[in-house]
Image (cartoon, rainbow, N blue to C red; front, side, top):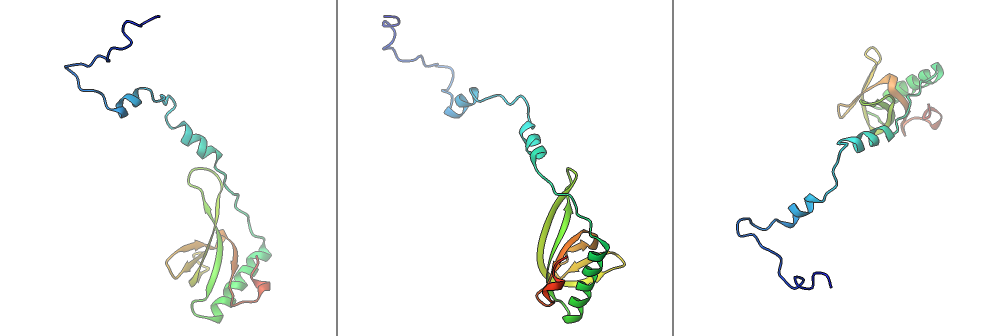
Amino acid sequence: MKYDDIITFDRPVSTRHKPMSLEKRAAQFAPFAALTGYEALAAETARLTDAKTELTEDKKELMNEIFRQVLLLEKHPPVSVEYFVEDRKKSGGTYHTISGRIKKVDTVEGKLTMMDGLEISLGSIRHVCSPLIPDVMNWL
């Protein structure tokens, strides 16, 4: 048979070089990433964003009434607010929902300030609800 005369020999070992570690040997056969960053770009392109919904004038008035009622009932009322956050990388964004207590509603600056310091643009709010106001007023 072929190679019968050398098949039983030990493999050659260099006297000048240390044996290569398994990690380095494996790295020699690792796939080459010719398109560095391609997978991240593809994932970013596939990531979905929402479009911001604009409130009608009726819904804006209803939201103002909700804020007025909530602020009259208690100094720092608990609320849940759903608001739009623009995406920094592509058009659109996502809606976030937070729960907390209102510190201030500034209609001049157009922002809602929560007790934890979070400021939300009134124009980005889609939904507000509070257990302190009737259910009819909870939905925008």
